Length: 244
Length: 275
Image (spheres, rainbow over the protein chains, first blue to last red):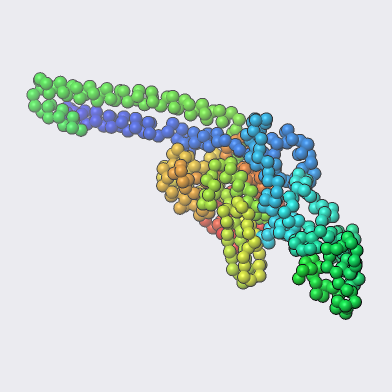
C-alpha cells in the first residue's frame, strides 16, 4: 500500500513541532523546577544564602562570657544581648573593626518594656516614667545586665515624683525632704505601713520663718504671735510650693 | 507553514528544476533544525544547571531539610508588647521600615466592660503601645503577636499560578522572588493577612521563619530577641524540644481552625475574641 505523499510531510511538521516544544520547555523551565515539588528547588538555596544579621546570644557569650555570667544570674537572664545592643553579626565576623551601636543610655530603651501599660501581663515589673525619677538615666540605679529593684529607693522622688517636681520649682527647692520629714528605713520597704513623719505644729516652720538668724535672711519672716495665731501654717501655705 | 505550502505546490507541478531545489532546501532546513535544537538546548542549559546543582550541594552538605518540621508557639500571657520582635524582623529581613509592610507584628486587644473590642497595632507595635483609650471600664486587654502561620495546607500556595510560592520539605512556606510575577493572588488568598507586596521588588513577600538562620542552626530573629520567651521555636513533631514541651503543658490553639489551613503557629492563652 502506498503511503500518501502528504503523510510524510505532515509527519515531518509534527516531529519539528514536538521538538520545538521540547526545546522551548527545556529553555524556559528552570533547571531545578520540580525537583522536590511544583517549585524551583534552587530558590530554597538562594533564600537560605541570605545575610544573617542577628548573631545569637551564644555567639556573644563565646567572647563576652563575663557579662554572660552576670546576666545568667539576674532578672534579664532570658534576654538576648541583641535586644538592647542591636544586630551584631558584623561584629562577630570582624570583632575589632565593627562595633555594635551602643544602646541608648538615657530613658528611651527601658520603657519599651517597663513603662506601665495595662495590657502587659500582671506582675511584669513596670514603672511610670513620668513620676519615676524623672530625667534620670535608668542605668544610674539599675544594672541592665542583672537588674534588680534597688533595695531601697535611692531618692524620695522615685515614688513621690510629682511632689519632687513641684518642690524643685519652689523657694524650697534646695531643702532636702528630710529637713521636714524624718523617714524611717522601714518606710522604704513597706511604705504604706510605716509612714514618714510630717511636721505637726507651727513652731516647726517658725524655726526658719520666725527667727532673725543671719543665715536665713532670705526666708520671709513673720511674727509668730501676730500672724494668724490660731491656724497651722499649712492650712494656708503649701510647703512644697509655698508661694501659693 | 508558508514554506510547506510552497513545497507542496512545487511537488504538484514539475518534478524537475528549481522548485525541487526549494523542496530540498526546506527539507534540509527542517532536518537541520530538528537535529540542532537538542544540541542547542544542551549547550544553553549545561552551565546553568551545573551551577545550580553545585549550589544545592553546598547547602545540602551541612543541612538536611528532610528531618525537620518547623513551627512556632506563642504564649500570649507572656507577651509584653515591647515590639522588639517587629524591629528585629525588619532588620534581619530587609523589610521596608514604613508602617505598611510587616512579616510579623503585634496587635493589642482591648475589651471594655460593655463588650466593645478594639484591635490596634500602631506601626506594627514596633514603637510600643500608648495606654489604651477607653470610655468604660477595661475588662481584658492583652497583646497578640502575629506572623505567617506556615500552614500545612496553605491557600497561598494553592492559588499561585506559576509555582513561585511553595512549602519546603521542612514545612516552611517561602516565596521565590525570581519566579514571582507579582499577580498578588496569594495576598488575596491568605486568610491571616500576612503577605504583602514588596514596593520595590514588585513581588509578594512574607515571613520566611528566617529560613536563612534555620539552615545555620539559629532560631528566627523574633524568637532570638523576645525578652520574655513569649515566642517558642522548634520542631513540631519531635518530643524533646522547647516547642514540644510548650505544646504539652499548654492548651494550644491555632487561628481560624475552621478554614482547615492547619497552621503551625500555636497560641497559648488565646482569647476567644482574637481573629
